[in-house]
Length: 206
Image (cartoon, rainbow, N blue to C red; front, side, top):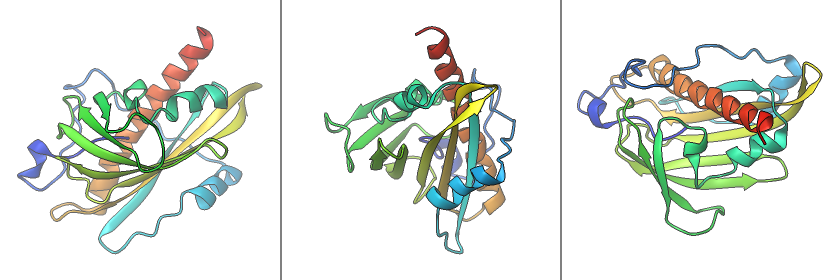
């Protein structure tokens, strides 16, 4: 997901609701039900250890496109706008995608932020894991870290992909854990819905 929080909401110290009318992309309101064997991915790859003032949760999406198609979009740390509709553009500080590299993300209207500085913590092309940490910006997501993994599966007899993205973040004063989780989960679902649309379109029109 990924620069969110801030400018307008910072003064009040509370995350606002994401406005459906201010953006052209609808938030994905569907919930992805995971089978028990799929929950094993959460236990294996998405282990967070929140403190008393932090919250953690995840969103997931089944995509009707093979893993390599989905991963080709996800791994582009330098181009999050490929499937994150709230991202206007992204500028890399370095000319290489590697652990520790940093991107400056400019955010579209519709979220209470204008920019986010994000560091690549892990890009694993074998296990298909992407870890990102927010290290600056005018958003309110303090100490935000995310883990995104993708897993091959079969959907309606065709190769498909399960995408899971989890996060951990501080709960700022004036907000509840439910407030923060609801806000971020909706943004993640919007991203994953767009990822599904783009991946499936690429499969249909290679």
